[in-house]
Length: 116
Length: 112
Image (cartoon, rainbow over all chains, first blue to last red; front, side, top):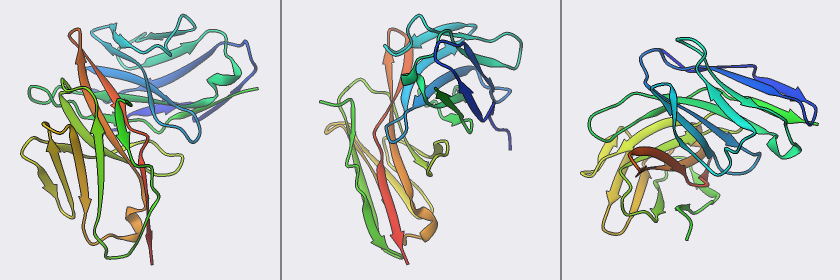
């Protein structure tokens, strides 16, 4: 069964450093997403991406964040200058259009980012 | 009012019990609705989409009430493996794009 993959599974970085989190969405999916989940809290939407551009972003997704689809398969999230509060699990998800309005998302296993 | 609200639980139920979770959403223009389950420190996994007519998948039944803006999930004959956090997810349409809003989740513990 096709699945979303993410690398690395765990990233430790120092405050102020740049990190790139990588995702390979399911191959025939058209929409891609990043979410984060701080330990013990709910899953929070960061950004959605369609047709090589951002289609929606949340207030969390500020200028420190960027996304890219550098080739036909990878989808990346870059955090330019990490802060302690960026420590969280980051999930990538993808979805394919299903009917008129149902978009079932499938999540990758996540990257645990620890900022020290 | 929170965009998507769930009772955090935990719900502790014996094996074989029937348990129901509710979820309310604030945006009446919400388009699609889903239940996901999340095991500790794992990714959310799609359990089922929720259709206007209600739908059933084995021991799981989902209902949608658009007038009252809530969705429900019923689990019959609970198994130990059903222990997890159940996330209500609402898809809102805004300016031609879609945004998914997650509830905080309801924790279920099925006891032997």
